[in-house]
Image (cartoon, rainbow, N blue to C red; front, side):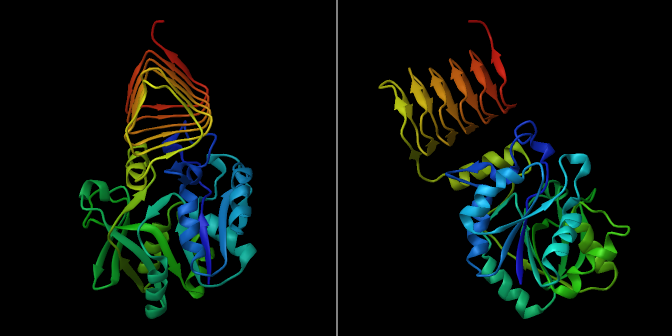
Length: 333
């Protein structure tokens, strides 16, 4: 068996934050999303590969080298050229060959034990998908909705207009080799983007698919809200590196503040704040927010917002905002 982490998307729902950085490499706590997945996958002692695109290839190289995994790179540079998840799986098969595959979405954070998941896969010997009860029919409509009889999937509907269940597929699948090879046939006419459409197609042709239910947590980092909620889940302890901090500033844990940052004046940082490297925060309150490297914030209040690198924010109150890199926003002097 081989594990394939799918990290080739362009994450348009999180633009402008993800225009210049891939979503799996967004920080959550003191790691990036991909690292949480890699640590779980490498614990299985099977070969692990990361599927990405040419545009972000360089961003992933350091992580591939650090963790001793191989990159599978599709020759695309923008959203309009992307192969889609199923297309990228086919692209990987052409390099790696047929085998049983564990497929993992590279933008998800989950409490699922992959070891237990693969034990279930060995037991049933059929396609297996990890499912999670999201508890809300409106939320479920954003995902692949699953209907079960026992552990067997009898209906799978990708992004339905009305959700018949609150059980959703979480982007984690195990495919036997005789099923994964069917992506070639499926792609002759099938939707290349979401794996859920492939599962729908498999069910329609009589293939058996089983579900592995898990509880705990699952975050699909597809929006600013889900990203910030994941930060809350994973940020349990403060991590403060070599920084300069004013005696009048206050830190309310938990926070991450990276090296080289200056917290000046009567600033209040936290709770649930991530501040990147070499930022300057002066006389500002920041909570429930993520601030990327080399950003300057003065005389401002930032709440439930994500501000990209090398921005300048002055004399503002930002709530539930996304600010792209190199932006300069201010009100008055």
